[in-house]
Image 1 (cartoon, rainbow, N blue to C red):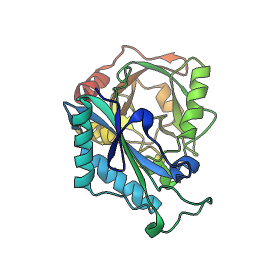
Image 2 (image 1 turned 90 degrees about the vertical axis):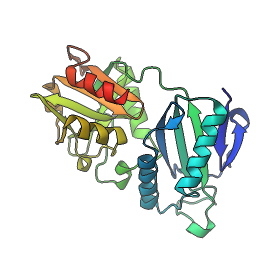
Image 3 (image 1 turned 180 degrees about the vertical axis):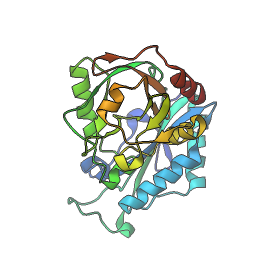
Image 4 (image 1 turned 180 degrees about the horizontal axis):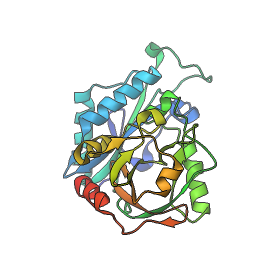
Length: 271
């Protein structure tokens, strides 16, 4: 395995990689990204992830510096060169370096930065977790940024810090109306009265790729959820591109048996 990343099409060793200190991705968080599972040397659901990246770019009026065929060639080259056939891949695109100031420069003056990196799969990607309902922050379902994977993750960071201070490893984020939105870096599903449900996109969760596939495969439904609903759930599990994590404890309440029957079905589908 080699320690390589792709920066704007050039393969460089990670330890020697350099970014412009005036890059807006660093100075302002003006960047978007996608996280993909690489399985048997191929990125899963690549077309869907790239379509979501393009949708995010439209929200930010950011012109992607590549087409689908071009970036897929770069991804395939990085996977083949690295020797990592099963991995987590991240594709990050920032607006690029610019003069000081908040307003984005005109598109014709932008030089976006695109970075592709490979990492080992999260070791606890299917492990049970204890979670708490975050009180320090809320997810803004009214913001268009709630629908895209943008690099500013400060709400999730401070919610995770709250969770860890209470002996948990994740947090359930509520939206501004007090309804359930998501976990810190995953979509949330619950089994309530035998029905599989997940918060609708209008309540602020990210439109997850794994979320959509599980909804279709398991016959789940989108439904607004309150903390009280979760207090009566027989199963709760969290999903992202890398796995399905059952929630073992939420706000001190244990959920058993673990993993539940629906969670096991979801884990078998995601792998």
